[in-house]
Image 1 (tube, one colour):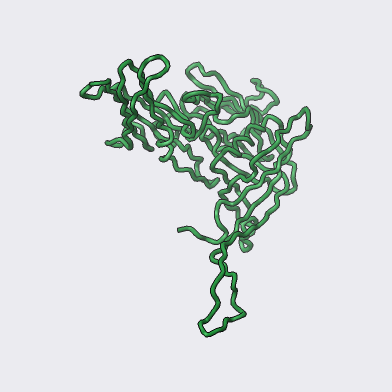
Image 2 (image 1 turned 30 degrees about the horizontal axis):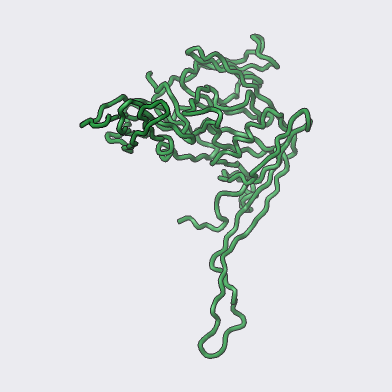
Length: 375
């Protein structure tokens, strides 16, 4: 099945460009859509972009336009910990036309298909970063509470199978299950696949992904923790690859509530030379509140520092919280998905050499007013 061979990160710029000696301008017809690659493409482009050429350092004329920001408008991110994890991907196609100085018509330079992923490249990744990774987490292992399984996001392209091992190292004697990857599909809902490490044949401690096309294998270690009296709080965020990544907070959680208001001085005079002393001269125009929760991560290895950085850089984070954190006292056993914002703007990285044991404190603010103001 012919899927786009190239992918782009939509949170970083992606430039379509052209260079010619006498270039006057370029026009890009941009198509952005979800669903099936071959049948759901719109008839007309979502955008027609134009850029005039300028003289570059090589003495040629050069023009470029950024398509990532516009394509990202078609990504809708939501999550509830119960449905299939979303891929947050779109199909991106463009037709590039150009015209030289004095030309009377446009020339079609070519058409390109891309997979748009709601991730980003780092500064050092350079111009038009290319997401070549196949396992969409930045660490070589995942941490879950004892008795749980992990969900590991992978790019569906090229994956052939994965193997589960229950020994301290990957060895033939520890192989407990081999699973053949599902067939690749042309739907954006399957661009990223989420592999559950649960097995009926044992408790896996390693998972090995195999990929075609000379991409080799990728090994992920599964670490189980059980260090607190209460259940760990599960969280999820959209990581740098545009995939949903799960994490667990094992330490203490403290809740706070703050209010904000807009006030004004009201006129109390009744027009008869008096006023009611029981009325508020300083009156509140509107008042609302926000709930915040501060949670300790529990003990984590140094190699997970990158995950915390990506969580802080994420624009969409959720916590799966017992209802007591949302004042749902009548439903104390209810677990609620809460969209939150990471309010901790900075952390000082800890290392095993200097700090021995590593844990962090994060503050999350619920991403909604306590009083419903949705309009």
